[in-house]
Amino acid sequence: MSQAGKFAQLDLGLVVRGHGRHYIVEDAEGQRRVCHPRGKKSDCVVGDQVRWAPSGSDEGVIEAVEPRRNLLFRQDEWKTKSFAANLDQLLILVAVEPVFSESQLCRAMIAAESAGIATTIALNKTDLPGTAHARERLTPYRAMGLPMMELAMKAEPDAARAQLLPWLQGKRSFVLGPSGTGKSTLINLLVPDAKAQVGDISVALNSGRHTTTTTQWYWVDAQRESALIDSPGFQEFGLHQIDPAALARLMPDLSAHADHCRFYNCSHQHEPGCGVREAVDAGQISASRYRIYGEILAELSNKRY
Ligand SMILES: Nc1nc2c(ncn2[C@@H]2O[C@H](COP(=O)(O)OP(=O)(O)OP(=O)(O)O)[C@@H](O)[C@H]2O)c(=O)[nH]1
Ligand SMILES: [Zn+2]
Image 1: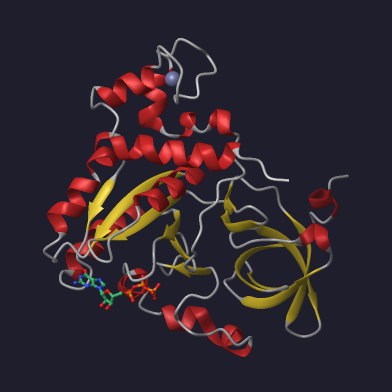
Image 2: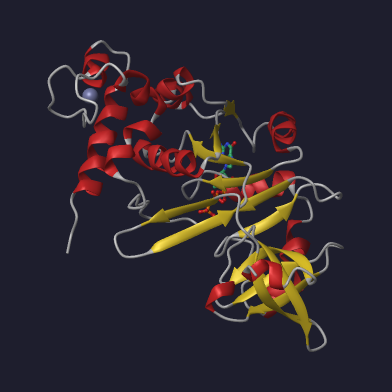
């Protein structure tokens, strides 16, 4: 019998937060409690559905993790860092200021694409004078057909909410963005009771600070149908989970031209008759996207021992 099957009679819960080896699990009624995994096999991440049993008066034991629909993660040279599981969509939040790293943006998109998660980009702080420049830097992404939002969450909160709420409706949305872009502002805008949702349990576990130090699940609506999952910042976004030969396929603007390459296993670097390089020369693929592709490819091809 499968690991999950053996525990099928146990209640299903949703992992809404992890604190080291403790997890906060929410039951069907919305009740949250601290749970401990039984063993290595029940290691879980935010967004996991788990089978759990009560232990003591108000805690629980996680016996099994249900199979995941997807898992968003990054993999640096030495370790894998999971963001969350079972997501419907990713919001990459960037801002006019601080100026965003296009490399980080591309990496987040590639990780999402390889996990089968749809990406939307939101540009915040469009009340600031650098907006035209930031918008221009996002032109290749608009051209790729990626859904885009322009927000000024501080200056025009109602307009921002009106754009975000329909997008969030009925979905589990993960937010990624560099520090200082407005993630806390976003949570406060959409989750009026955010503090309460972080809750007493987390305060007890000593991380009730609103500033994200751990991935945090918020329900946007009282029906608990729309969720916003906020994540702590990070420095590096490694993509070592990706086979270098598959990288271009995860970049839709490049892969659109890869069929025209002379060699089926073209790396789009030095080969003659490369459709991707021709498209770069013709201005059909942005030079910066192609440069970032080359950087990531080098990183993934350079196996270290
Ligand atoms: N001009 C302008 N400033 C904004 C806007 N939205 C947020 N800010 C400001 O940007 C700063 C950073 O916003 P936060 O929401 O704290 O950003 P954060 O992404 O949570 O940052 P970390 O806590 O460092 O992860 C704050 O001073 C906000 O007031 C906006 O639409 N326009
Ligand atoms: Zn090629």
